[in-house]
Length: 149
Image 1 (tube, rainbow, N blue to C red):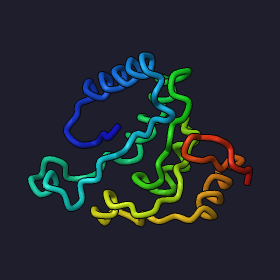
Image 2: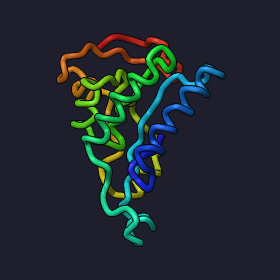
Image 3: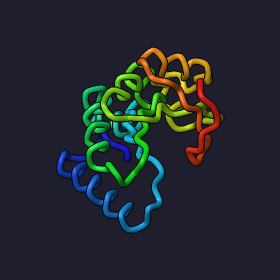
Image 4: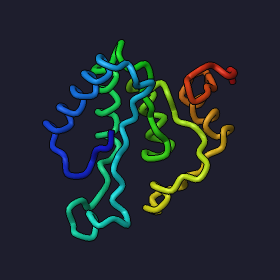
């Protein structure tokens, strides 16, 4: 769920409820990823509709709310180092995220904003998670265990 552009808090709350209802109906989501809108190099920034990103406090609220809203419904909450940076993704693990995000090949959305590097090695991800005091379980695209680190 992208946030941090033109939505209100009420819009966000309604979006959470609709996602929960859809998950109850279909069971189709394996993970929820709150994805902060990055305004750099966008028309919304040029038109001064969105002048800066939502920031870390909003991310932590989104993670905590999603963990509460989707408890028992959506098994994984991703902290997304890609859109939030490594440090905030680490903090998000303390607020309810259990998925740091993985390595990427050919990412073309966030990289267009020039906001941050969109490359992170598996070793750097493992180190970042261990720095927060967690064991690292590498998983495949379907959340099946691959190996412990």
